[in-house]
Structures are given as C-alpha cells and as structure tokens.
Image (cartoon, rainbow, N blue to C red; front, side, top):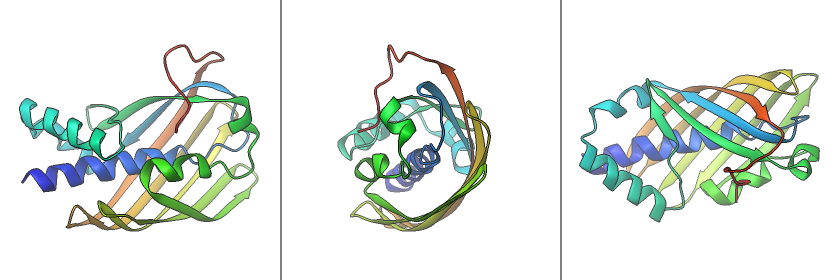
Amino acid sequence: MRNTLFSLVLVSSLLASVAHSAEHDMRPGLWEMTTTSDLLRLVPQIPPDQMQNLMNLAKQNGFELPQIQNGAAISKVCITQEMADQKNPAVFYQNQSGCSAKNMNRSGNTYRLDFVCANPQLKGNGTAAGTFTSPERFSGRTEFAGVAQGNPVNEHADVSGRWIKASCPTAQPPQ
C-alpha cells in the first residue's frame, strides 16, 4: 500500500512538473500552477502519518510535494527572465523529475511536447499539450503511461498556470 501511495504522489508531482514546461512567452515572476487529476482526489484518504512518510520519501527522491487540496496540487513557481526568454524551457525540469522532453512544438498560442522517464522510481512516456490565453495564463493536459515504484500507472491531469506578481519573494526557480 505504501508503494502504491508513493507512486500516486510521484506521478502527481511529475504531472505538475511537466505542466510547468509550457513556459514560452511567459511573463517572468511568481506563478501559481494547478494540477487536477483522479489520483489527486484520493489524497484525502491517506492517513496523516502515511502522508508525512510519503512527503519524506518524495523529498528523498528529489521531489517537493505541492500543496494538495480538493483534488488539486497547487504550487508556486518563480519564472526568471532567463527562463521566460528560453525557446525550449522544458530543460529546466529534466533534472528534477529524471525525465527528458523531446519533440517540443509551439504553434501560435498552443504547445505540445513528449517526455520520457527512465529512472529507478519512474519509467514511461507522456505528453503535455495546452494553450496560452495570454502571457499571464495557460491551460492544458498532461498524460503519462508507465510504471511508478513498480506499480503500473496510466494517468492524465488537467493543468493551468496563472501569473501572480513580478517578484518572487518565497518561491525559487526550479532546480
């Protein structure tokens, strides 16, 4: 059960990370990223002591769990000017999740990319696609199929991002 729950959190963190990969023409500053999925709706069923253990395990594996409530993972991300200027911002997240982005395509206000995860905790393939409605908002969908901590996973998530303010006093750029 513990491995299944860790897999749930691990994949949810991955989906949230990939959602951030859509940073073309983003306004630099503090952003709020929201990821909703069926897996995240199960988080309230996890007892507090097990949730703390999962948070510790995630941290040991290089993930920082976002705030999760009402089936949504909500995180704050600092987008630097350099990141906002990048033509292929997916590289900022490859080290965090152990996944690599490829086939990134941008046409007008829409984006699409494929990603591959090949590490001991997470193996599989996915896609992320969405639309920028302005330099301060985007929405999209991420899909992933593979294995997390030895458990099969076939999950999708809806993602959205909104710019909050120009300065980033509490959030740090992704590593």
